Amino acid sequence: MFDWPTIPQSITIFGQEFVLLTMLQAIIILIVGLTAAYIAKSLISKHSKGNLPLDYSRKLTLLVYYGIITITVITALAQSGIDLAGLFLAGGVAGIIIGFATQSLFSNLIAGIFLYIDKPFKVGDPVMITGKLPDIAGLVVTIGVITSRIRIFDGTYVTLPNTDVFSSEIHNYSVTIARRIQMTIGIGYNEDVDKAIEVIRTSLLDTPLVLVEPAPNIYVASIGEYAININIWCWVPSSVMFEMQMQLVNQIKKQLNGNNIEIPLPQRILHFADKDRINTT
Image 1 (spheres, rainbow, N blue to C red):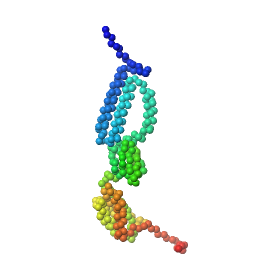
Image 2: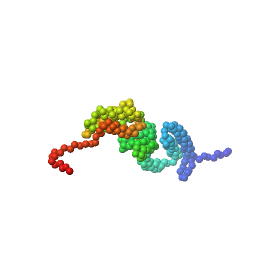
Image 3: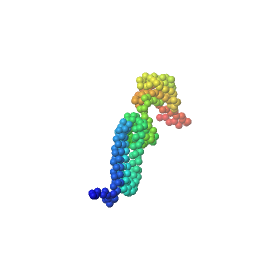
Image 4: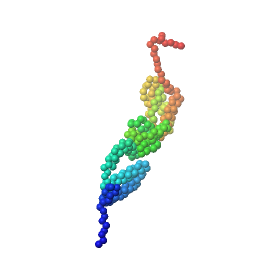
């Protein structure tokens, strides 16, 4: 009779004995794991496009892909009979070191994803970020995976970690259609308050970009040390708010001067107890 060759139950590689059945199981685990990683990568890439920025989509896809591959390789090695105790020990120490080193990196990454989902601002929006950070006002230039960049109104660029941005108060000046301008102007004590208010109101209503509704609000706010202070509130389109604020200050001053309404300088009246001690030259 023909004797079939006996299939060995195990083989020895580099002094390490491996059972063929467990090796076959490890190979199957690798094939299934690599296939699952490829399918997950394709699905995440497909569904994240259009919902997440390209940067976020790529990084999320690679994170899931290599995460599945890592788990698959470790599972396959363990199934094959390789002692992973030393590897896990070294990996645990390395993981602690890497974890401390990349803690802020991952927190900024997660904060960047939340910024994109929540959408408190978009590129080009004028914003002020305050609270956790010192007050920073300017235009949003980029919203990155780890950091966001803002061009301050003086022209300089500031790069902020996404964690600090997300945990701060964000004032977005482009969300509303109109914004209110607030000014205070002082007039002399001898001036006619009603006339001054009417001059200011007429000046505002004659300005095309000052909104009729809500109507401008002009009123005496306080009596100061050397002037009667008049508060001026008016609404303008958000897109021209800064330009209109500069224009209206200059415009109202000219109107008051043209109507001979004094805008006084700071004054002090000094009383001397002993007039004989005053030396005149």
